[in-house]
Amino acid sequence: EVQLVESGGGLVQPGGSLRLSCAASGFTFSSYSMNWVRQAPGKGLEWVSYISSSSSTIYYADSVKGRFTISRDNAKNSLYLQMNSLRDEDTAVYYCARVPDTAHIDYWGQGTLVTVSS
Amino acid sequence: EIVMTQSPATLSVSPGERATLSCRASQSVSSNLAWYQQKPGQAPRLLIYGASTRATGIPARFSGSGSGTEFTLTISSLQSEDFAVYYCQQYNNWPPTWTFGQGTKVEIK
Image 1 (cartoon, rainbow over the protein chains, first blue to last red):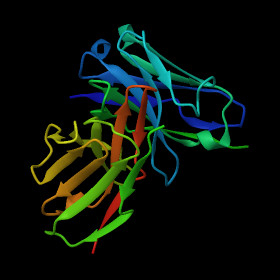
Image 2 (image 1 turned 90 degrees about the vertical axis):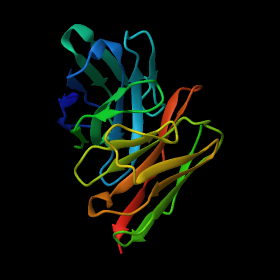
Image 3 (image 1 turned 180 degrees about the horizontal axis):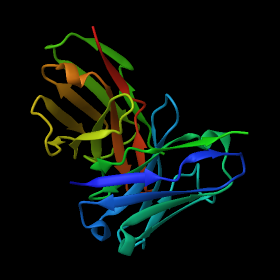
């Protein structure tokens, strides 16, 4: 069974940093690209970042470019999102998601809540 | 930037009735279109990808159609567990982005 478990969320002040992690199991993690997708409270879904299976290709949404860094450790079956210079508008549930063919997402984690507030 | 527009924002349907949800892209996305279902407090679940292919385990009452800029998700006979928010999503090669529609809430009439 495919499982994606996010961790690392919490309350942080504007301008602060946070590192999210996603532990993957039930599939060959090193064979799949991954996305981070977020959802602000009561709002819709927003793609944040993409990383290919070998980390050779990385993309970011304009809203986070230069502030967030995606990475992965295939030996540890883990995905990461380093978030710096956090803003109020970054408050959201952050989902780790598997991307089977660069076109859609087939599995999602349960999400971790990031709250940016003073 | 490709914008995805879903309609209606809210759809009130009685159990057993048919529901038709629309998604329009501001420019052609070919068949790079997926549909997701999200219930309160839960992560989204993949229903349809490639515009018309049902994901594993998705009941046959869910069907997708369309290509280019106009897409439709049809639920042939609504069950109680189908009341949820539905999102369409496109993938664009360049600039590489995954864009979601704003969602359609299917509620009990």
